Image (cartoon, rainbow, N blue to C red; front, side, top):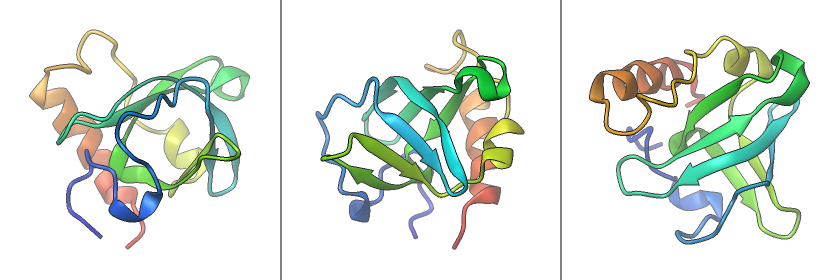
Length: 117
């Protein structure tokens, strides 16, 4: 597995340019919400997921490296994390998620430590 937590793995089935907004996101143990926005920028690709009511409307920032599979037909994104790992993730900060290297390092470090090898 690549060390780049901010890049899509080649095996996901995702191709740059697809609009993932509104797609369902599935953790290893169930649905976690829908994509609110995303980026496929090289070295800073991510999903912002609206988790809805299961953690009280929290938004989470998921680095693209957490994506295991993209199902184009079903419009679903499968991530290699549990719901608890996502719930315990660093708080999403809409003002810092673009261009703040320290914030990216914090979020990336959290998910890097929770990815399955």
